[in-house]
Length: 342
Ligand code: ADP
Image (cartoon, helix red, strand yellow):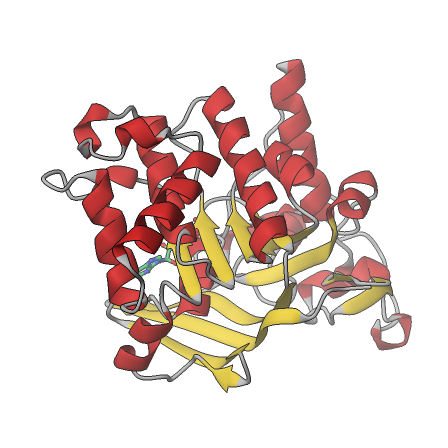
């Protein structure tokens, strides 16, 4: 049984207007994240993961336009006013960035960061409650109370990142988006942080969207995984099922590129993700797909449910009745090359 969704994303689109054209960074994406659930979002750089994470929280840069629905507590966050969104940020919606120093103020003690954050969102809290809550959250992150009065520069990068996470979690958000939260950290600290995040969602029921390019992290820390390619969800399902039996050729290729790192054999997916101003027509992955069929270059794939809670956007899974005669023939190499240039 899937847990009750904390957030339901329906047909979300996020476009950036640029002088060269419109970048369709998130193109008709739908997904749910349940209470206490960790959804991993993976895919190569430039596939729209950060934009999706920020789009869900309404934290998009200027020049971005979003449309569709992000349903949270019965309300649509898309199109909600900045003021109202700001009120939700912190106690309801949290974001953990990649680079911790950008958010910690170097002239403020750790204690002051916590006081400011809590007072802003929970003004009724007594000084004592404030201190207890802060120390408890920091403690979960492995930061002892003795360090509460220190300044950011007195901590290592890994500890600062843990402090940032504690600052996001002290408000006990219902939904947390963590965008490559451990990318700049060493593997031991990374493993610690992921363990902590996973414990916390159990304690507070926080729904977590974990954006990463590291599939090992997803295998370890996530319940479900969504694979993003060229602004769309190529595949989504239970993380173990997807890894054991990937349905989309892109997922398969991504997994192969991870395994190759471990065996030190070099396998990278040929080509690179497309420019999202003018992505390939029909299936966006077809120019790079080892299993591409004729239909893949001609018609948009239609999302298919292939098992309970699993969906895939790929003609290999049908629907057969919509594949024209000859459509399942392999796409000729020359055609792949032509499509690649298009
Ligand atoms: P990912 O997180 O998967 O690396 P992003 O969401 O960062 O992907 O980027 C998706 C696409 O949107 C890319 O083509 C990127 O160049 C483009 N993009 C991201 N931010 C902006 C922006 N502020 N203005 C214009 N294009 C952007």
